[in-house]
Amino acid sequence: MTTTEPILRAALVQAATTGIDTIPEDSHVERDFGIDGPAPAEFVTTCGQQPAVVVPDGETGRLQTIADHRAVPARLTSSGKEPTPVSLRHIEPKQRGFLIVNSHPAGSAATVTRMWERIPPRADGTSPVVLLLGHSAGYGLATLLTGLRQHGIRGVGVAYEGAETERRTAAAGWYRTAAAARLADEAGLDFAFVNTDAFSESGKTEVLDLLERRYGKVDYLIYSLAAPRRTDPATGAVHHSVIKPLGRPYEAPALDFSGDTPKVASVRLEPATEEEKHATQQVMGGADWSLWVKALTDRSLLADGFTTVALTYIGSELTAPIYRQGTMGAAKEHLETTAVELTAMLGGTGRAFTAVAGAAVTQASSAIPSIALYTAFLRTVLGDGFRTTAQQAEELWDRLTGRAPLVVDDQGRIRLDGWELDQQVQDRVRELWADPEAGLDHASQGADWFMAQIRELYGWGLEGVDYDVQAETGIPWPMPSR
Image 1 (cartoon, rainbow, N blue to C red):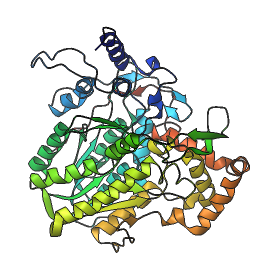
Image 2 (image 1 turned 30 degrees about the horizontal axis):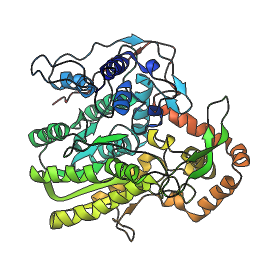
Image 3 (image 1 turned 90 degrees about the vertical axis):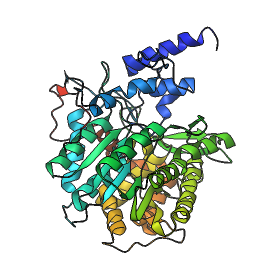
Image 4 (image 1 turned 120 degrees about the vertical axis):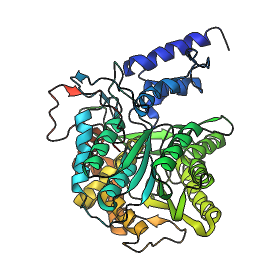
């Protein structure tokens, strides 16, 4: 280590505690995905390739890391101590293109409440025990709310969300979790939420202890994690996922929101190296999914007829060069191979599937070049026929619980994406894609809809939310009420 490196690390640690404004505009952290706005702590990890050293722990003498400090709010609430006092702030969105670096607590809660109210209530009396990894956004959130609303699921949701700081609000996923917990509690449902790194051994132990103590054997494990990096618990290696093509450069139109109105830009990406491909597979593939199933097995926490599902995506041939044929596609293929391996490992005691969802507006999808433009065109073609994440989650739960036939494709995948890949739909999207600038003129409402959806992910732009009043931002992570 050079003499200047500790100074650099100290500066990055200070950045992690003072807010997003300390991060350079051109930092590549803005291209990360799967997190609710790039927290400064993510920047520290990215730049240093390992957690930055801070100060020794007063009790153990162990050198603390950024991860230790990020875990403090969760440890305080899980230990029963008083959470951070509620604070009032007037918040305005901080936005640069697709990047939104703060969230609105009331708006974030409103997105959850609105989704909840649009899910038709249904009681089937089963109340299965569910472990949902990645519950706070996208398809994971939709799967959680649909499971609660229609099947009375019990169990544990896991997410890794940043708490409020002096300069920043908590992550939108933090506020969405608090809202989901409130709705579950009001409905008399028993579901607990853990804020931890699901990739870590300590995180697995914490969750498994809670399951064993409170719920018992697990009927369903839903795997819906998306992240920019993962530390291999066996080797300690830190793998960073990338969104790149394989084999050849990628050049395509993309949607640009940097000005007053959306416009078509072009994007070019060089192909990934074999190391980058492998790293992306290690983060977004099936390695961690497999570890979770093995950990449940070792703790004798698999119920008879146990089923596990990992959510995945295929998409259109238009986006295939950057997605299905790129590093992300390689990771998804790894996920599908893992499903086959897990089914073999489980033998007659359980089964494993991947479920192919259709297009959606998520934090992750907005970071993938060309996906925004493609999704805007798809929305223009389909209108209200664009299926929501909750509608797709309802279909998934019906298939898993036997309310509908569990049909799979020739590769054993549950398909929820037929509405997107319908030939007539894709033909009409392809016509817009052939001349993207003219297509955007025709699809301007679709582009505006896409950006509005992005803003709503962080709680902005929702009807019925008064953004002029001060908002309570110090909302604690939900504690179980039973």
